[in-house]
Amino acid sequence: MIAPALLIVTGHPTTGKTTLASHLAAELSLPLLSKDMLKETLFDTLGSRDREWSHQVGVAAIALLYRLAGVLLGAGRPLIIESNFRPDLDTPRMLDLRARHPFRPVQLRCVASGEVMAERYLRRIAAGQRHPGHCESPDAAEVVRVRGHIEPLALGGAVLTIDTTDLADINMAAITGWAGAHLAGDPPPLAE
Image (cartoon, rainbow, N blue to C red; front, side, top):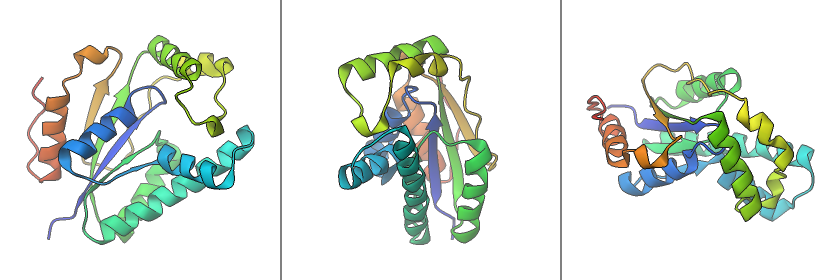
């Protein structure tokens, strides 16, 4: 029996990973586990405080994400997980998850220019689009601007890097087709 696919959507905040993951989940009829969805549920249950509390809730949310992913993979279900996965922390976590619940990794890495990420970050703060528990501040825009790109996790498997700097240039149908083919175990190259 072929191991289920785990579609891993990663990237820095404001690179469009949540939008992409939500689109793929709807188009491919897959469950989606998002760190921020879990984190915001914990904020709603436990309350919001300060940056340190937000960090602690984030640690709990990522632990829940891995636990829930293990439950679904253990049942043989493919799924999508979405977060700003860090290679130094999340590669060992993913390898441990795969040792307990074998899966085929398929990574979609969202990247964008620093200027665009900083602009999007400031826009979403101004618009009040984020849960207040995240404690985002305009002062952090410069940090967002100079981050660079998140590297893929060292898991093997397919990796697709999607530049979201210009949202009008993204071919969502091609990305969905690519992910769906990997999900089915019949991966073609991405048609641009």
